[in-house]
Image (tube, rainbow, N blue to C red):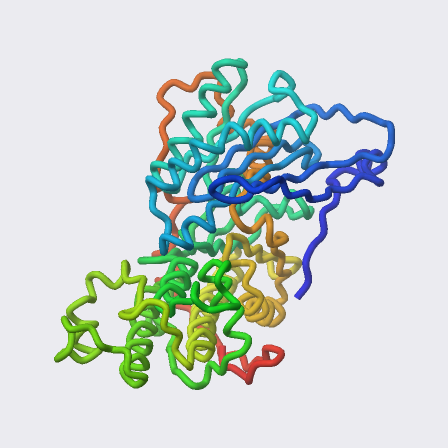
Length: 466
C-alpha cells in the first residue's frame, strides 16, 4: 500500500511553490476540544496572486472545519475543531450538542483560517459550504453562518454535496482524469459511484441500512472500549482497528452479508446483530449477563425481543467491563466488514469493465471517507485492484475524514466547470438526506456478476478467502 503526496497541479506554479511547505501547529485547548490549524510557510519572497480563492466551510456532522484553497490546489490555510472527545464521553453524537459546539466555534475557526492564510474576506472569490447530506442541526449552523458572510461581503455562494467533495478530493493531490470509480466509506455513508465529471456521478450501490463506520462505533461502544487503557481517546473505528491487530479473527465466524445478492449494495446491520450476539454470549460465559430484567432470558431471546432497537444499542449490560476476548472479537468484526466491502467493490470493478463505463487500461479506484484510513481494509482493496489491473488511490488520512479543504476544493472545481455558483441565495436550504448521482444500481443487479474468490495473505494475518 502506498500513499500519494501533495504536489501542485500546474508546472508554472510548481516553480514558485517549490520550496513552500505546509506545517502543522496545534492551538491551545478549548473548552470542548482541540483546534488544529495548518499554516502555509513560504521561504521565498515571491508573493503569488491566484486567480480564484475559495473559503470552504464544513459542519455536516461533528467537526467544525474551514479552509482557503486557491485555483492551483494550494491550501493557504486550514483550521479544525473536533468534537470527538465530547462525543466519546456521551457514547455517541447527540445532534443538539453537536449543534451547540458548532455555534460556539465556527466564527473562531473561520477567522483562524483566514488569519493563517493571509487572506481577507474581501479577497475571496466565493464561499463554499456543505449543505447536504448530514445532521440537520449541524448543517444549519454552517449554512446560516455562510449566508451571512456572502450577504455582507457580496460574494458568490457554492452549495456543496458532502459526498461529492469526498469523491473529488483526490484530484487536489493527484492528476486523476474522469471517469474513475469511487468507494466512499465513512460513519454515515457507504456508496460506490463512478465519477464521470464534476457533479456527474453514476450510483452503483449503497448501504441499505447503516454505514460501516457507524457499525464499528456501535460494536466498540458495546465492548466498552473507551474503558480500555489503549483506546480511551480513540474513536470506535480506530479502537477496533487497533485491537484487531492483537487478535485472532479465526476464533469467531462472522460471515459477510448479502452473499446471494449479486449487486453492489451494502448491509451492515446484520453484522452488528451477529457481533452483538457473540458479545452477549461471551458476557454470559464470563458471568456478566446479569440484568434482573433478563434473568430468565437467553441471549438469543433477548436479541429477538430487542431486534428493532439494535441499531441504537451502545452500552453493555455492565458498562466498563472488558471481555477477555475483546481483541479476537475486534479482529473478527473488522475482517467481516473488510470482506463485505471488498466483495461489493470487486463486483463494481467487474461491472464497470463489462459495461464499458471504465477502460481496463489505466483505470482507477479512489477510496475516501473516514473509514478509508483503516489500513486493513485498504490492504484488502489493494489485493482486488492488483488482480483487476486498477490503480488504487486514497487521500492522506487527514483528508479522508471531514475537513474544510475538500469543501473549498469542490468549490474550485465547480467554479472551473461553471456549476452551481450562485449569486443569489434565495431559497437555499440544507438537505439532511441527499443521493449522489444517477442511480443505476438495479442495472448492476440485473447483470448479476459472480465475484471470483481471491486467496490472499494480509501481512501478519492468516490467509483469507475474499
